[in-house]
Image (cartoon, rainbow, N blue to C red; front, side):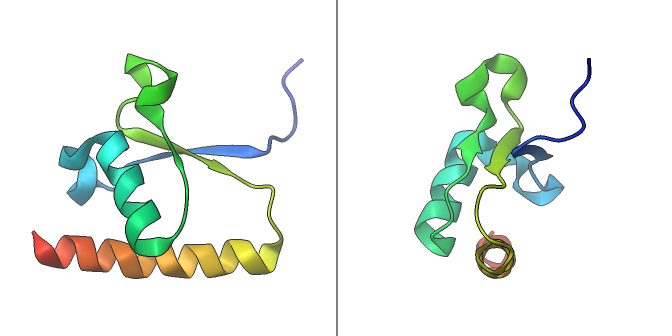
Length: 80
């Protein structure tokens, strides 16, 4: 039976950041946004190009993390 929900989301790397790979992308989010995601490559070769996000925090903390990720992505893109 297919579950109706999960505590994880798999998200593709943004197109402009794909060249970083999932490990480097995850490291940059941790360093620049203080947000930890799991690099997809850690789950096998098919996971490359993806990150796994956990949905176990409160809505307030999740929104704050999203805002920090958006700011960090803009900075990373600007440096290219």
